[in-house]
Every structure is written in C-alpha cells, then in structure tokens.
Length: 398
Ligand code: PLP
Image (tube, rainbow, N blue to C red; front, side, top):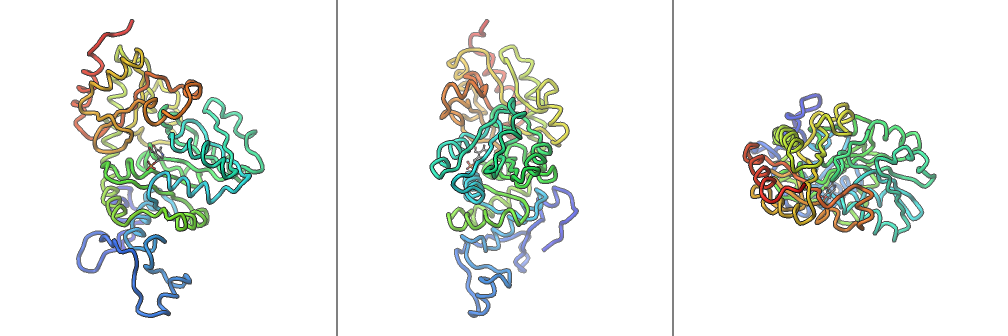
C-alpha cells in the first residue's frame, strides 16, 4: 500500500487506502464476496480473536474493498478511522444508537435533513431518547440546554436548506467541556471545503450518496473519527446489518478519485450563479455562504475553503408561481437529492421538509417560495440560461 500521509488532498483521494492485487491492477479490485476462506482453523481464529488483520465476512467490514474505501475516507477527512454504511441515515442511526440509551438526550442544532429530524423527533423517543432542537438564533441557550444525560450535539454545516453556517470549533469546544460528543454532518461541504475533525469535532458524518458518490448512482454513508469513538458504532453497524455493499464501496472509491476537481468546479459555478440570482428582480433572497451579504459569510470564510454547490433562494410570488418556475427548468431535474454531476432542483416544502408542520416550517423560515438547487457539472452558461428563462417567463409579482 502506498504511503500517502502528508500528501495533498487530491493525491490522497486517488491513492490512499489502495490495496493492489499484485497482478498489475492499478487500484483496489472489487471483492464482492460475502465470505472469505482460511487455510486452517488457527488462521481463522487469529482473525476472529483480533491477533491478525484479515478478511472474514463482509457484513463485519472485513473485506478488502470495504477496508480500502474506509482508509481512503479516513485519509481525506483527516481522521484515524472511517466506517462506511448502506446509507447516510444508517450512519446516523448507528451513531445515535451507539451513544444513547433510554433516558439519554441529544441536542440537534439548526436545520437538519428531514430524515434526521424524523429519526430524532419520531423514532428515538420510542426508545426513551429525547432531542432538543435548537435553532441557530437560539445558540446562546446551548450550554443551558446541556443536561447530565446529554450525549451528543449534532449539527449540519452548512445546513439544509437555509445554508446556515455553524461554528464547528466553538460548538465542539463547548461539547468537550461538558463531556458531550460533537458530531458534524458535513455532507453539504465535503472534505474539499471543510475539515470538521481538524476544527475539533469528534465525529464527521457523510451521506456518501451525495458529493462523495457524486454521480447519483450509489447510496451510502460514512462516519469518520478516532477509533475509540468509532468502536461502539462499528458493533451497532454489524448487528443492525448496515454495511455498505462491496460493489457500492468500489463505486465510491472510483468517485472519490475525482472529488477535488468535481467539488472545486461546483464551488466556482455555484458562486457565480448565487451572485446572479442575488441581483435578479424575481428573487427575494439568496442563501449561499459565499455571498458577502449572507449572515454566515464571515464564519464560512474562517472554516471553509470553498462554499459548495448548494444554493437556496426565495422566488417572489405564491406557491403556484414558484412551482411554475421550478417546472419550467429543463437542465435542472426536479429530484430530492444533491451533489451529483447533474444539476437538481427541489422545493423544500415538497420534499425534504414536507413532513414538518406549517408552524415548524414558519419557525425555521422554510417558506413556500424557497427553492433549493444543487449545481452540477454542466456548463455554467447553460445552467444560468436555464434559470434565467425559468425566472423570466410568467407574470412578475408587484
Ligand atoms: N444528511 C444530509 C445533509 C442529507 O441531505 C441526507 C439526505 O438527503 C442525509 C444525511 C441522509 O442520507 P441518505 O439519503 O444517504 O440516507
């Protein structure tokens, strides 16, 4: 295996973790085997009892293709170890279950993906695990909200869909002072734009379905951090049967090799599009950390190297007029995901945040006119042309 420690991010995305097959293959092959054979019982026991590193059974993660992509992910996030999962939600649920028992408490900051809110607010209470949801505007209450039973502070940054930016170093320091784990969902940012572990977070979570996969052709998740924090999560992953399939791990490694060029191109195109949207007469507001007028811009400048490919904006007009704008888009597909080479558009009220009550949406500022776009890798001029024609047609409200 090539030593990649200390090398640049693109080099690590390409070479870290590779386990070559000795036959000239230039990257880790796909071992889609569910099990592995041993020459004798003693050799099997060496692996089962932890004396030797070996391949044993894919659901345990003891498979070279899975181990290889985990080493690549650990390297690109700057963590000691990574665990991969069958989805981003699998990564989240294993983390919450590993750290919270009946009577325990979680704090979730700001907007979170709708599935995360359903898990924390709908499923985990059935197991006696409660969550306090604090908005960004309520962050001054964070220390008072931490109880003796609080185990985790979980937050996305930037958030979905408001693109709110949270102070990873500051929040992680508060968590550490109270003996609570800080967990950052860095899906929107990617390791190209943000390194939560270097800023003091204990664990980083990704839906690898998004930018890390990058081609809308795989579903997966990852948790990255110190081995001591990952050990209990690994046991839950094994026994809940949440392992990423080897075929998916192979595809994910393929995608990670181009992560840096993809994300940097998406950063550049999104910044230009956000600037143009901000001066468009039919757009009331643009949420993008790269815009100097955006509330999170100064903080983003201190903890992000690029501002990402996600933008949300509010179109003037009622829900029907906004839906008409979305429906007129041709290059942006209406789809509830993000981070792929294809540009996507969604209205949070129809997809990611459809399950929230009208009051909760209002409290969170998720208005009917809000549109979220994931800027893909098509030509920037074509993407702007598509947005401009969709916004231009139809009556302009007073
Ligand atoms: N985290 C964020 C920020 C997301 O946007 C999503 C899905 O959209 C998830 C987690 C869940 O990921 P998955 O769909 O891979 O389970």
